[in-house]
Length: 167
Image (cartoon, rainbow, N blue to C red; front, side):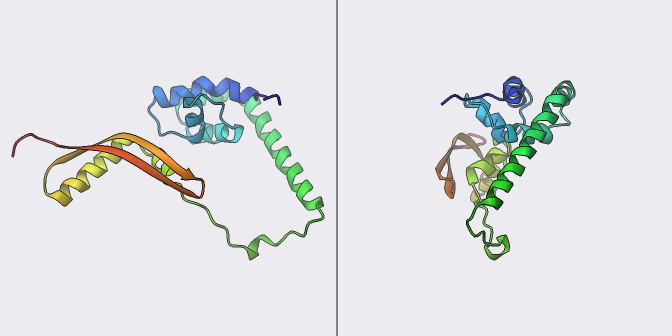
């Protein structure tokens, strides 16, 4: 089976890496894919471009590649329309969407990736210092997502130090 790489995937690889490494912006799924050595999905790329459209390098990329971005959005729209038509033409009885409650699983690992580690460390340090009545500093050594998409947890490995050696 041949993997096809979309032109938008190819043209954004360096941009997405730069957003994380050079700009230190919160990680998006597209940026994480690039950091892990994979091409992100086209939808994830478009979401990242939209999220960081005010960043100079993103704005320049969007202006240089506006035709490609618009073409990609049209392709996605057409694919969704085709899928909807296919589902409508199936002989299977479709249950009204309103009869089933919709659930969205919360993935703590994904939620934590949207916040900088420095902000999490600072918050933990403040709360732990208040709780223990001692100035403590929390340092996050690693963050790992564990479990499946519906039963996911985030495991943190932290080091707690005293802010000063003496009282």
